[in-house]
Each structure stands twice: as C-alpha cells, then as structure tokens.
Amino acid sequence: MKNQFYSLRNLVLLPVLGIALIGVTSCKKSTAPNNGGTQKPATATIDSTGITTGTAEGLNYTGADVDDTYASTDFPTTITITFNATGNATISPATTSGVSIAQTGGNVVVTATATGVAYNLTGTSATGSFKVYSDKKYLVTLNNLNLINPVGPAINLQSKKRAFLVVADGTTNTLADGAVYATAPNGEDQKGTIFTEGQLIFSGNGTLNVTGNNKHAICSDDYIRVSTGKINVLNSKSDGIHTNDGVIVDGGTIVINSASDGIEAEEGEIIINGGALNITSVGKGIVTSYDDTDGSVARYIIINGGNIIVKSTTDEGISSKGSLTINKGTINSSASDDAFKADSAIFINGGKMYALSSANDGFDSNGVLDINGGTVVAIGAPVTESGLDCDTRQLKITGGQVIATGGSTSAPSTSSTVNSVILGAGTAQLIHIESVSGVEALTFQAPVAYGTLVFASAKLKTNTSYNVYTAGSIASGISFNGFFTAGTYTAGTKSAATFTTGSVVTKVGGTITTN
Image 1 (cartoon, rainbow, N blue to C red):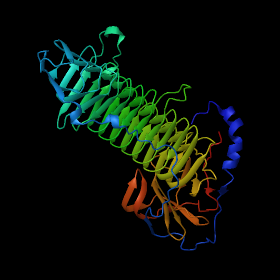
Image 2: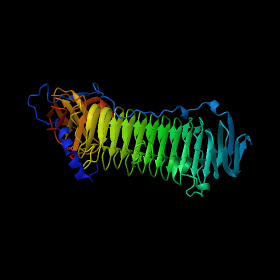
Image 3: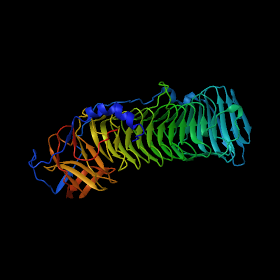
Image 4: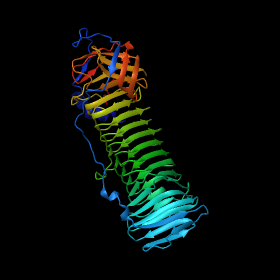
C-alpha cells in the first residue's frame, strides 16, 4: 500500500468510498439473538459446505498453439554430438546435406539450411559449447549432457526459428556458463547459459540443471514454453527464466534460485496452466514488467492451475504490470513487499491462495480487486499495511472464502453478494467465529498479530448473531495455511466482540483504508 499520491487519490476517489461503504453496518450486541441457542457450546464442528461461487471475471487464455508441438516424423535427420573431457567433440554423421558444422575443440557451431534436423547432445566438457544458426525450426535433445562454457553460453541458439529443446527421459543434464563472456561476433546477443533468439519449447521427462554465472540462466528474445520435464535453476546472477516476450508453463517441475527475478516476461504475458513451480528470488518471483505506453503489448498474468510456491526476500512475490487473473491452482506467495500485485486489476475465480508479506500488503491492486471463488488467506504487515488493498477502489466478493489480516483493509463494496465481517486487533492465536446456536463460521490460526481482520464467506448468514472466541483447541483439523476446513473446535475464551450481521458488510472494529 503506497501513499505517495495521497492527495490525488483522496481528491478523485473519496466519492467512490462514499458509495462503497453505504452497505457497511456497525455491530450491535444482541441480548436476544434472533436464532436463539446456547451462548457457549463446548465444541463446534468445522466444515466448508455451502460455499458459493460467483461469475468468473478476467482472462482465461491458455496460450495454446499447435505450432508448439511436434511429431517425431517432423525431424527425420539426427546428428549426434558427443562432448568429451579432453575438450573435443565427435560428430556423427560427419557430414549432412544442408548442415555445416564448424568445430574448435569442444565448441561446436552449426549452420543449417536443411529442414527437419534434430541434434542429439551428450557427453561431458568443461570447455565446450553448442551454437546454432538455422533457417528452419529444429530440435535439440539433451541426453546426459554436462556442458560448461567458461567464456559464454553453454547453448547459444542464434536462429529466430522455433527450437524444441527435449530433456531426454531418464537423463540428468547440467549446464553452466562463465562469469565473464568473450566478445560475441557481429554484436550477437548472449544473455544466459541457455540463450535463444527464437521461441524455445521445453519438453521431455528428464532433469535439467542450469547455473547462470554471467546473467540469466535461461533466456529467450522471443517466448518460452515449458510443457514437461524438470528444470532446476541452481543459481542465476540475474533472472532464472527471462524472455522478451511471454512465458507459458503447461506442466513439468521448475525450481529456481535467482539473485534477481525468478521468472520475468519483459514485454509479454505469463500464463501458468499447470506444473509445479518453486521459486526463491531476491527480486520479484514472477513478473510481467512492461510499463511503457504501447497498449498492444500484453502484460497480464493468468494462473489456470498448478502448484506454485514463491518466496521473494526483498521484493514482490507475483507482480503484473497489467491484470492478474487466478482461475485455479494452489499458490503460496511470500514476500517482503506485496505478495500479489497488479497495476490494473486482480480477479480471483478459484484455487487456493496464501499471501504473506512481511512489510507490505498481501494482495495489492491498483485497480479493482474482485474475488468470485476459491480460498484466499492474505496476511499483510500488521501495523500500516493490509491483507487486501485496493485503496478506495472496488473490493467485490461474490464467492469463495476470504480471511485477511493486516493493519487495515479495503472495505468490501455493496456489489458484493457474500457477507463479510471486519474485526479489530488480535494476536497470533486461534480465532473462532460461530453463531450463538453453535454453527461454525470461521476457525483460523493467525500467524502474526494484526490490527484488522476481514472475513467473508457464505457461512456468515444475514441477520444472525455470532460469538467470537480466541485460543481453544482443534481435534482432527485440516487446514490451508491456518484456515481450517474440517475438524472439531473446543472453545477457548469468549470475546466481547459479539455481533449481529445486517447488510453485506458488518464492521465490529479495525481500520478501513481511506486512501
């Protein structure tokens, strides 16, 4: 939550705030609750039945492209290059029509005009490299390849045509570059251990380990798609995966440790359809970074599935210069800055999200923040920041379940259809909300202290009185980052914050963001 434009935001957006808060009611203690029942049941059953889903918003593109697939018959010609520890390489067959190969020790340069050529790379060299110039699309198979180029990229694909990089099933391949590159001929780009001028499509079910000592570990001046395989960026001086265009992840496993961003699309979109990603970065974890004025440049992030873990030690977790749409998937993003950030809008339609920021917001949208489904657990910094922050713009909740803590919160708008309650300060302990008849609404283990808590769920019924408890215990509990979806709660200490829901938002305590 940034306040450097405080005056302008108040000038423009205070009328919006007046609209957004019309439906907010203050709580009132009820001496005769309208749904009756005992005041303090000994236990309560935790469940997640009856959760509603609203109408999906945002984007649902998958980036599917038939040209990013191939058949074995597409590449009938195979050239095998075997690197060896003596600093040389053998090439078989020695000659191929339409393919010229120059070799200096273990450095192999291919110039191809032929169609349908596949290159099978194997062996070990501490002073080797593989470089391609090609007029046609081509395939490169890594087949137990261990290759280090101390003065440049290990794999340097100077062709602007599509390259299929197959990590052969059952193999382990290791690539590294040097900290200082030799000058490239003709001003060629060479931006990482694996570098390509064209589209780069990863597939296969082997393992690829990459170290980027000079700049990026894997880089394309076009786009990168990961279909299958296991890619480990062991370390990169800059980004783990970097593109000038987009990044699409359909499956596989990607593990990244980077000194800058984990995955960056400089002038394009990021789409994650599936797979497992585990990113630890000093910079942003996953980011689309184009912030110029060309409206034709896509800069959105779409998450359609997958299991994603992001940890940024000094920056934002998942950050879009456009919109961020989450349709499905399990996402855990922790950061020192915003855990989830978008410049234009955030749309959550499904999935499970955990946002943890040590010094800023859990979710921060510079436009609307609409939650239509899924499970959202958002933890912002406990004093000055928010779990959910869209300033005084629209925070609409029409489905799913939301629990967010921080110093303050944006207020759910009157366009919301799911009831919510805003509570005041609490500590790092269990908080439990149940109706006075003993029906559980919320059971949550807060990880840190907070000044404001907001909870939204179809389990909060209109015109119903609720008690709030702290501490207590849980038996047979099932939780998502402290948000319990099953189990049995045994009551702890009853709080004074008894409330009765009225309109869609009930404010018991806490602070609502006003700028």
